[in-house]
Length: 467
Image (cartoon, rainbow, N blue to C red):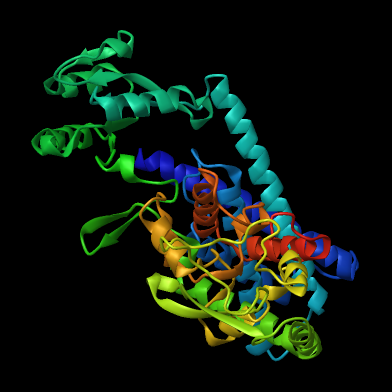
């Protein structure tokens, strides 16, 4: 099994090397033409460094992981990361360590573009070809499932309904059979050694509860003696999400049931730097003249302060002061006699004429850019709710508090998907929370850019759900 994985890795690496060499040759020909000597010392040195650096960088960003049961998007991101890091390394090395750089700057850019395009196209073609082969019964891995309980049957149904995963269940082992396994019961756990000898099996899948740890130990010892890979389905799988991950803490495997790209400190810093730069640019180009105009209109149309400050819950459920342009009459009620938060409704009498326009175009939220500068809020993230509404929701909405593992945002994935305004109808708040959690688990810089763009479009055309 280990040998087959090594061969698989070497084949994938060889394919990447071919793309690197072809990309280098095409780039060189495009810039210098065929008149120059290709096999010169600078060319061979540059190509050699590229070939050495590529797998090192690729393995560091998991380019050569097993993507058998994942969509191509995971592999695409790994290719993109490897190409970007490879290009940065390339550029840094030759601009800072070599006195003479024999190529124009366009060489590095074109070389990177050809590498990214070539490897993406080839890997996508191979992925699709393998999926088709597996659907037709080729390139299949045979597995033995130990355990006929609920976990084992759910896993069996998963592989049976996903032919493209490329797994075939040879049969089941357990102390007792299950009527729904369609005659695939092969015997008891004590028969494992005989079954591994009689059947062609690649992986042994253990789907037993934690209480049967003694049996697990026997299964692992017997399977490894027969050179079979053992995979254990954790008994906590029912709590896991699609973003669950496992890491080693010393020798202890730690299962994280829900992860986010924003768990990475580098991602947090990049997001923070981008939002700071974006905010500063807005203040220098637009806000310096727009804020006084809005403030003047508010003062001319209603009495009271220009800004409205409200305490809300932020990162890690810590209280923050959230700023907005005042859009309601001064000292209007925010809670009813029962202490429930009074959400803004359609044709709400508390909203001023200029306030209605500000809320419709989201301009009332602009002072929250001060919160971004102070670090209380992010440009994009789950919207913070007023404390009375927050207290109501945390006890009634599933996974509501998970929104607070990241900074709240001025705009968010829920807002650009229409989840704005009052949440009086059953399920509206839950839908909003589900969108927020999806954003947290799928965060990327490009997703933030998409949300910002959609927010700008909503500001221009007006949001029908903004009261």
